[in-house]
Length: 286
Length: 139
Length: 137
Image (cartoon, rainbow over all chains, first blue to last red; front, side, top):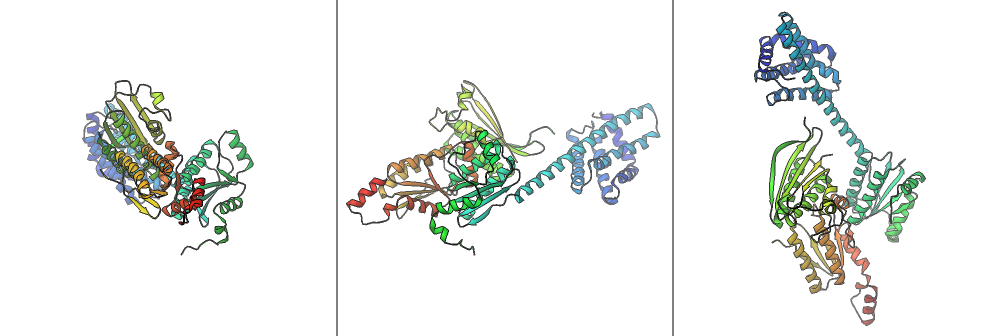
């Protein structure tokens, strides 16, 4: 894939000799695919940067995208892909901005027409392909990062932990519980116990359609962790199917209190914490 | 884009005394914070490091911990290598069993530490010393 | 070597662990506490671990041992202020801290001790009351 020292020298020469024309044409060809969603000046700046780092890499002898001397070029390509991915361009639109240099090189080398320049073109072309693939990879990575961030934000939103009585907090869980979400719930619930100084927590799973072994384990671990901290957990709203799953999976709920509904769970907690608390209305936080 | 390339220079801490175990914990905490591990992951990693450092001291007769920040392209992580030239572990399967101990502890050091990290690798044998590599990745 | 201070507040000994203890410091604390329980005749021990950012199996074992020793010396031990991340890690580690009573904070810990030793509330101890106390503990 790599260009040998002579080839890369010729590539650098070709690109720097016609610098103005190369960046001009490159920008023009790339513009076509972006349909005016990126300003001409911005695109021109990106193309110039790519051009400059390609020339630099070419002058450093053997041109290999994975080598140390091409570090600058890789950085420029990665930066380009990151920017485009964030701005909502497609992978193709991004890669075409890199592939456009092939057309420019073809235009420059066609004039020569000899066998030698044909071989050069094939070599240059495969290098540009490699650059394109690199761009594509960085693009995908950025997008994956964005998706992961959004998933995390969604998690935060979907797991409210509320204080429902003096000394009692509740987490109403709604929707499918996967392992990642169960973990977030666990951490937030325990933190709320500390912040509010509440010795009781109710985990209400009325809105959870199904649990698997992993999720059940997470709930169990939460209960054990809360106990270690000095708080008690009650699980409420277990649906019949879930009860069957729990038994079928052989999960031991042991001495964990389970109640049919959130209201039952609250009543149970108030009885535990003594009649005094039940009679006294919740203290208002100032 | 090789998986798990090293970033930055590895930092080493000798484990020759009780106080060194404390220093290992503090070093790992600093590196884990810099690698932006979540609070729970930091806590798990430091706890695992504490167990393993104590093992290195008690069973390995002292050794060294070396910590590096790693990157697999998607996530950052912290990798620690605990190495000693002690007698090594003869029956690894048994040593990794919960509750098994030769040192009078709770027998959760090795098996517990393994549960707290994402990757756990151990190279040992009778008379060959012990080398344990653990990695925790950011979520 | 550093030492963890043990404070006496009324009938309770309060230990607030503020530093990253070496194993030696932990063992020292175990010894100090046993001596202070006997010397002061306190019936409650509160160990505040709010400042601890990890509890490994060694510290876990120390806490269990302290709880057992104080039980023998007729004192109730409550560990308070465990951080969520520490609790999650302990569960994963497989350490259950059997026999240790826990509370969210010092205040709740004191309530817990008061609730488990209602007989200690009155100070006019005559022979009969003394008999009751021994019967319930």
